[in-house]
Amino acid sequence: MTIRSILIANRGEIAVRIIRAAQALGIRTVQVHSAADRDMLAVRLADQSVEIGPPSAAKSYLNIEAVLKAARETGVDAVHPGYGFLSENAAFAKAVEDAGLIFIGPKPEAISLLGDKVEARKVAKRAGVPTVPGSDGRIDDLATACAIVEGIGFPVMIKAAAGGGGRGIRIAETMADFERHFPQASAEALAAFGDGGLYVEKVITKARHVEVQILGDGTDAVHCYERECSLQRRRQKVWEEAPSFRLPENVRQELCASAVALAREVNYRGAGTVEYLYDEVSGEFYFIEVNTRIQVEHPVTEMITGIDLVQEMIKVAGGAKLSVRQEDIRVTGHAIECRINAEDPARGFLPGPGTIETLGVPTGEGVRFDTMLYEGYTVPPFYDSLLGKLIVWGETRDACIARLADALDNLEIRGLATTIPLHQALAADPSVASGDVHTRFLEPWLETDFPAFVASKEVA
Amino acid sequence: MSKLEIRSPLPGTFYRKPSPDAAPYKADGDSVAVGDVIGLIEVMKTFHEVHADAAGKITFVADDQEPIMAGQPVAEVEA
Image (cartoon, rainbow over all chains, first blue to last red; front, side):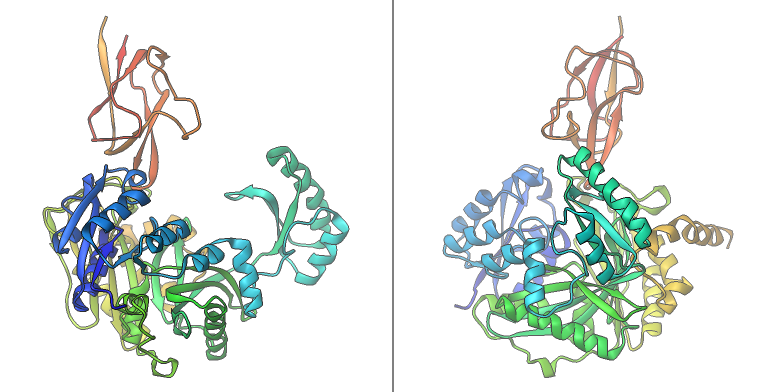
């Protein structure tokens, strides 16, 4: 069935992005919003809007019943969940289907299967996708643990089976280390979590975060090549690129093929991302997880492939076959995305809402700015700090960075502090230029190189 | 006897408890000292403590889990 109307169950820049994709396909749009979001750009752009609750996300954007009520009352055919909020909630996807509507994303079964870390790892193994070497579940005695560690190599991480959030983790560099730490870690885990069970996993030092964009129609699946998102702060991506330019061609082929194999294993429908850690030293890559939704950084893939991922996910949700064959998908040039957040890099990234007094957006070939901002708009404090994404394309990576530096200088957002100065510093950094980065590069850099860059600019 | 107001330093959502299952930091009528944590403000998914800047008997005027503006009174303290 062709989708004629869509309800957007999200807010901010991604709601704007979805509305524009729907409009390009001639689809009617209904935007839901909280009481704090009456003035947001997506509400202004949509054909119709419905207020579904108070500012608190738990009572509005995360309220399944309120979203469904709006969908029923406005008579839409389909619901697009965007990213975050209910986008990876299998119960929501099922509730949408049970209401006789189309959920623009994978089937609920695929969401719940891939959303469970242990189950997803099993799916990956079945599809022949390499996973981080480890004990595959809990181990209770030292002898078994030593035998496993012998096989995977050092350094290894000893984790409490009942732990989480970084607690109960120890790292062993040698077997002697391991034999000493293991019993201690077990005793500690028992004391902290009431469960002494442990598991072990190889530590990938200096890993790059590389991820593959997949598209499926429930039968067939393709990949749209990879992105690299190694520049992260507190596990949040800050700067994303496509392609991962230092990846050897044979590794790229294997990586992308493994993501397609995984997608086929679950008859994937819609847009998704398979995330990996890539160890540049050994040339090995390891599966981390699958995100069963459109991602924040999807535009860099669109810029190098020319495929509109949001339109494509709407079309396949409506029952269409994929509009592209694998052999038609080619990479041209290089793209970089900078996340512009309402955070002050000079004050420890303190987030701060505010009213946009001036908005100056750079234009020109290869420059795109996905945003929900307009002059006079007041950014509310209740949701995340993403204001927009500056995406720049160039024929080569060097040309892309040069164009990005210009675009950043011409992006003017007055009225609140933003992360633009951080991106200006990154665009001028020699390690970023050479691509000599990994997932733990940015945090120490923020302590040393970033203040130095800011100081040098102030002198100049 | 004087009444002083503790105002929110940031706009966001005000919480009286450190986590949904925990007890409130302070109950109405409790005595507070300068620097005591009396609540949290969630702004853009980050949490910031609200400290008492006066000592005395506290009475909350802002509601738990409700939006708050910067400068809006959170509580009153009777010295």
